[in-house]
Image 1 (cartoon, one colour):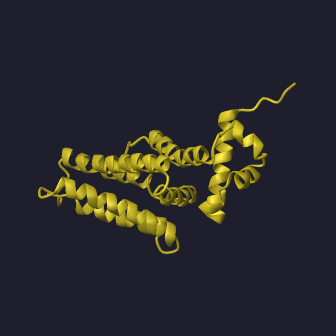
Image 2 (tube, rainbow, N blue to C red):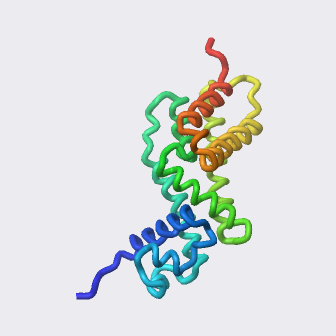
Image 3 (tube, rainbow, N blue to C red):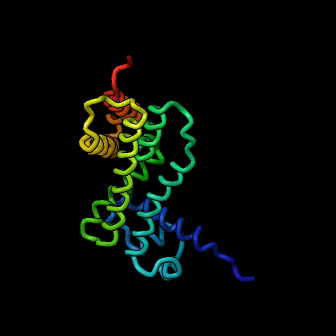
Length: 199
């Protein structure tokens, strides 16, 4: 009997092989031949899953975004409002080994997106979604009447967005200094600074 291949599963395995090469050797080594070897398949059979290298890289980049989205969908958000907001924002930050690996790959793709229009379109879409999540947090604070009365919503959205992104970049570049604990503490401190003093 011919071997039945799960093409969706195989595409994920190939994309994860691309991640490993990018993390270990850099984006410039993410050739079809190297990725095929890492995935344990022939370069010829790669055409069954991806017609071009660009299609493969786009799929691998999108897989990072999908993993984040899937984790967010599984969150219950059943705690106090401030805990829920921090929980959401931490999903966009590399505070676990798994998320650090994803973030390292994501930034490599983001750098390549400067010269690849398809990757740039995806990067822009994902960054817009992150900004929307940040905006949701700020608007939630206002809606629950937890925010300071002098809060400038638009500026605070940009500031929190920059904080989340900046902490993530530092965690990728200097994981020994920007630990999960430091990231969470900085985020908690910032969220608290947006709130009015308890009456």
